[in-house]
Length: 90
Ligand SMILES: [Zn+2]
Image 1: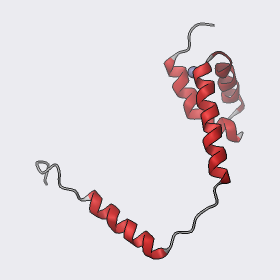
Image 2: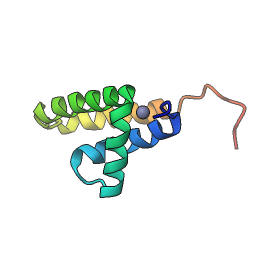
Image 3: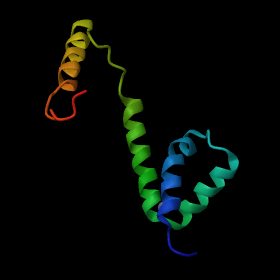
């Protein structure tokens, strides 16, 4: 096989989550599997996905106190209106 094409790697990276979930169409599964056979970097990406997802699954969903949520929203709103670029006013 020729060298790994960055374009293929991008396609595979986009499909890895579905590939892992088993929600990927059969033809794409074949494509991903085939690509992983000759592209170690993509295998690495796939393995790191696996690790992240495993960690996420182990974490318990955390309930946020309502006051905290409000405060965070306000913080975000404040952050969103930072006027560091004053020359694009409408
Ligand atoms: Zn690749």
